[in-house]
Length: 103
Image (cartoon, rainbow, N blue to C red; front, side, top):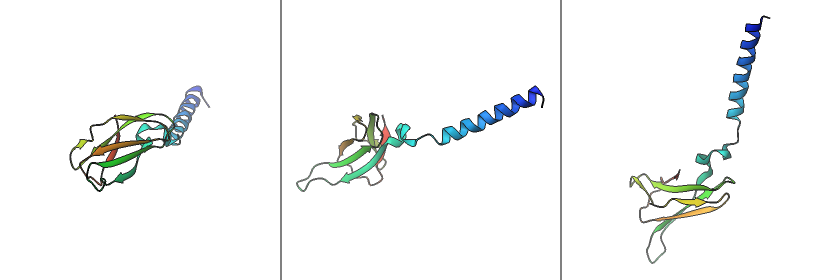
């Protein structure tokens, strides 16, 4: 095999291995994957705000907010949630399609 062909084979092998390693990396390292919906609690019987509970399933602390698509806005609170911990977000808007976002 000549040197150019050998270099091309080595480069192609490195590219394939690199893409395989990138796809098999743990998803927990992705901060977008860390914040997950945990609970949606109705207001207390006397009235008040609903509570959206976010769980950080990673070991690193990240800042999350709750976005309410039906209102087109967030709860207005961006707070750090420690790894393995929970964040609590209050809102008067009830939205079963709520989302967790990094902020």
